[in-house]
Image 1 (cartoon, rainbow, N blue to C red):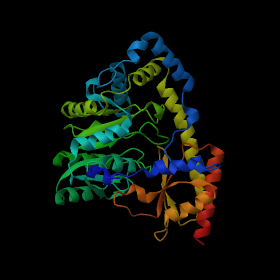
Image 2: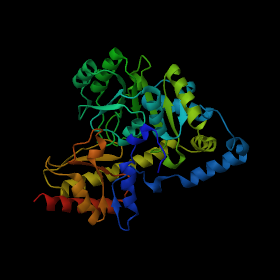
Image 3: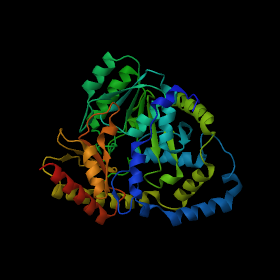
Image 4: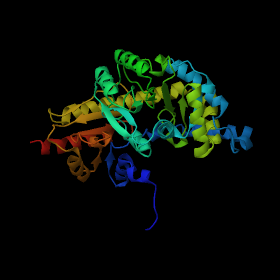
Length: 395
């Protein structure tokens, strides 16, 4: 073709997760690849009831254009929930409803990044963020990260020696892909550095309410005294991803710019989806619903980890997440998880190779497993199959 595309398209590639999810279409495939919620936990009957109330009481309003910022009653509920769950004292006027939190990532790239600017990430980090930011042609730089989060000394050294750092992207709670959670001490040290360098921080928090053990740790946004932290939230993991309703919470002067971007992108979030979720929260107990999700996912997490302990070779390491949807597996350095995946696919079981979670590649001896989506019998069978493959290639 003779069509000329924008240069930014050269940097954009298909999501490896989305491609891997296609494996689930193969008959008999047990997939630990996607970060999919358990479909049996979707409140279908309750949402049908909420939808009926919305359409009967205000159908014409629900089907009409509305404000860019979002449906006010839902923004009020989100602000109240952020205070209750994350100790973030905010107001509805500082919340913008988005088309899933992924849209918040794209908007953040559009807001902060020019070509050649630097984005700092945990190592490893969520590949969907890389894909969202790539369109704006930044440079990605990994910050050394351990079990407690970003290493403060390493972060400060990078900020001292690197020009054009425009943004830091982090997932402090039950991180994707590792499942790790930052310690309180590490969060305080991080924020002390951020305040000195005045660097905007995107705090992505899709999993924060899905804790299965231990005490909640204050969010970065709750420690934000200078308006530098932009908090991304979502209903995808605590209700249903099909509604595509997330939100941005930010300081007023920053949020206003996000609103301008939203106006140019799609005018507004879905009116009917917002109204249905808001009505659900009035008719039903969202906390009780989340508790049922936690109980199921916590049980599946324990089952997966116990089965890994029984079937994986002793040389294989893996995280013990206190919440979220994932555990992270590390093979001996000489192994390639992509090659192992091909052998696993032959046994009808799949995962996501870990190299995709490093913006510059590498670490091909790692992979991510999801424990939320598969039922218990398939978790045991799928992990057993992976264990058999690992035992055979590590003999």
